[in-house]
Length: 220
Ligand code: ADP
Image 1 (cartoon, rainbow, N blue to C red):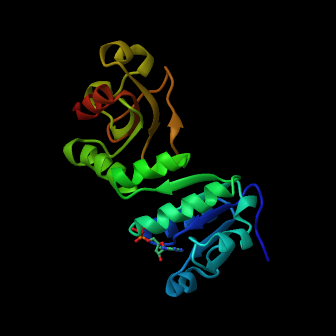
Image 2 (cartoon, protein in one colour):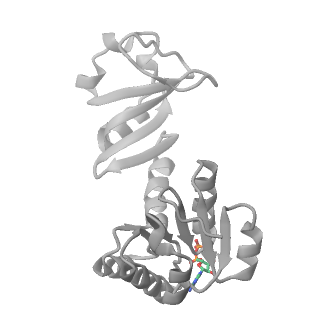
């Protein structure tokens, strides 16, 4: 029994990062083949993913047998065992077809993966550490730097922008940010427009250069 359709994803390494990623893919309707060489992990995810296989991903014959070349996307979520991560990526790259997303535990590991030709190298711990720094230091409720120097920030609406239509404020000029969306109480998030009037307790989504968006989130 194989699941190897264009829309499915193979996740190799079902540790904390890989299993969380695999379960989130399942929750959003993507079929997932999970692979790990650790029996307990395979057992615990059995039934939670479309298919879970206990196998050593560094072995070319194993990955060929699982038809990984028929997948469009493969995530290599092996981190701590750097050599297993590198070997697995190397085998996958030889199989040519899938686009590889691989987790790196540090810059050196990431550099090697990039040199091998891995298309997407991700640094979950480094990225999360940087992101949490912005949450810890400021008033932001959530923070995502979508590109270098450009961010989305979720924050309470500052007092000076309450009770007035956004279109009547000059905040794009004076604060160089856009209020993209807002939430009133526990109502659904709504796109903001010129007629939007925010009130105390509303939460807003601010878009702008990182420094500007964060400065706006600090306003009272
Ligand atoms: P995390 O920090 O996300 O828990 P780890 O690097 O600790 O990440 O775990 C990665 C997972 O990859 C582990 O569950 C481990 O059993 C698995 N793994 C390591 N080497 C291999 C391999 N050669 N083949 C398959 N799975 C592997």
